[in-house]
Amino acid sequence: MDEAPIDMPALVDETVIDRMAADLDQETVDACLKTFLTEMLGRVERIVNAVQAHDWVKVGAEAHALKASSGTFGARRMADTARAIEEACQARRDAAAAELTKELATLARQTSASLAAHSSGQGRGGRSGDR
Image (cartoon, rainbow, N blue to C red):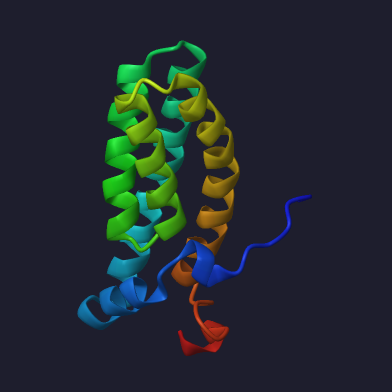
């Protein structure tokens, strides 16, 4: 992968994942993260397709849903970018929404990798041996 790694705190608020882990068993946390990651990647794909179709209503609706789910799972940069896309759509700044969507695809891959590390037990401080 040619993308420069992004520091995990810039992508993920680990306290959210830690709270989930404190409240739920690891199997449930893993299942929730897996579901979120699948849904996140699907939403990003739908946003990209809607941008290509110039369907700004759909872009805004999908970005709104992505913003909410990303916030729930501590994917802060994803949530912030989705919020910016939603706001651009609401303000009818189509070019800005399209440009932000380009960032979203890369951010989705990086966020997915960071959250997958949590799911596999490699979260903060390299806890891979904690399983």
